[in-house]
Amino acid sequence: MHKRTFKKGTPIFKEGEKGLEAYLIESGKVLIVKKGPTAPVIVAALPQGTLFGEMAILDGSPRMATAIAGEDTVCVVVNSMQMHQRLMSLPPDILRILTGLMEYVRSTVPFDQRAKIGQSLEPTPRDQQAHLMLPTQAVVDGFGLTDPMLKALVRMLCDYTRRRLPPALVKT
Figure 1: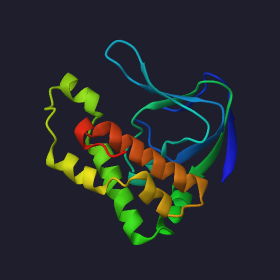
Figure 2 (figure 1 turned 60 degrees about the vertical axis):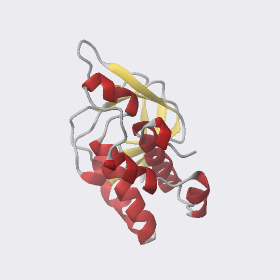
Figure 3 (figure 1 turned 90 degrees about the vertical axis):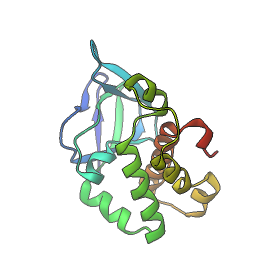
């Protein structure tokens, strides 16, 4: 792994590109921007300690959004082989949970966006399944993860999953 510095306003990667690396923010802030109907929309401002860009290297899908340095930012860069090696070091049960959450996140939109695209607000079978897989914080703490990259990945997947679940299904 190595570090890269990005000046404020510098694109780190662009929506639709093939993902070759993930990033852990060591210092600074990163803006996640999606193409909107008339102009780009900032969908998240990621602080220090956040992992981003991981989904594209985990499942080979194109980048879901553009990442731009919101201020001067230093990131630890990890390539797909390094990420996969870390994941393969996990116990099989934890890896199964993470894989299931990744599939759910990739196949759904955040709950608050469902009505805007004409989807039902009723819980689906996929929502129910993700709800059952989503670990509580106590369970995550019990994983005993020491690798900051893996900790950030688990935290991110749980957060993404919670945003996609109907509020009645969200675990604390």
